[in-house]
Length: 472
Ligand code: NAP
Image (cartoon, rainbow, N blue to C red):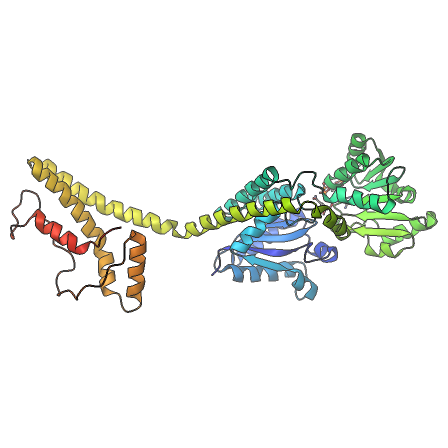
């Protein structure tokens, strides 16, 4: 059985944007999915992250992680009406146990991003965890895993060069436009949307020396705020058609779930432009531009997956940083795996400690009572303390000793091995069979009492020596 953690999902590595957008979840849908998953018999904890690069569920299984991952795969596809779709089935992956931990850590460290080292994924992961935690869908294991994942991301950013000069999807979109035109100076660029990605794109456009940056957005205030910041111009959303006619390049990244750059709209636009070339870089998921727009004459449409080629060239120079970051992830993942494994034994350790303490305290109390009750000589007091120690040893050894003696073939070897390992003992050669006698040594007599055999302390020592193999 693998560890309890599992990951199910798809990402830019396994699924083109056309599939990713079908599986994408809006924030307001996520709590419902988490409730459904946890209502079933497989999933104890869960969170869901849905970004332009990935849709993934991180979970903790009630039983076997592979079984839980299978159930979540089916649920994920079904919740989008894509159960049985072979493309979705091919694109979905799952990881369980240690592999799942490594995956979560790599995602947090932006090592699994389309643009390696980008800063956005960490915020998205924190938001996704926040939504799940607020819903009560996370517990100790996922909580600790994500806490460590955030720590790993911080280490990777501060201890490696991965984030230095790192790009993001928006800056790569601008870079792609620059490559197509050779130079963006003198061009007019229309930014569609005014959210986080549009803001990043607009800032990069300004740095790239674009002459005119026009921002349009559903809510005009946001467009104006962004235009002010980058010294651009804000234009009303209902003028989109005219704005498209005037632009050389369009960078679009709205959160719309249906295309805003539709084929009928762009058909009118291309006609009005007299088929002058128009470059559209659509970094939204779901996509802002209907893919059919790319078939129109004079329209050069790029989507988020087209950025991969630019990214690959950028990454080549940062292979060393990625390697350093990978080592941090491996080290941290190994530590977390160890912590997770230790969680299985914590209740046993606690029970063992409580049992030992109960036995020791009960015997100690009897000795204290004796010491209070009787006037003892210093020698007798010493004897009382030794007797206490011996009684505790006898009581604690009684059960394991019986179990060892009564174990059947097969289990006897296993028990002997475990005993030697647990107590750090050297293996001892088997002795000649014992004559049948009492399993436990007789309790040593109370101090001050006269032993029938006249042995007292010596007798107790002998019994102890018979019972106790040599410690290392
Ligand atoms: P965001 O900060 O929430 O901004 C969303 C923008 O989309 C706002 O300007 C919003 O306008 C607009 N919008 C939302 N629904 C709309 C609709 N129905 N019609 C027209 N405009 C609408 O989101 P973001 O993080 O910038 O992401 C935007 C897009 O980029 C998403 O498709 C996302 O998948 C993709 N993307 C994000 C990242 C990332 O790291 N965040 C990376 C790559 C791609 P209002 O101001 O009127 O609300």
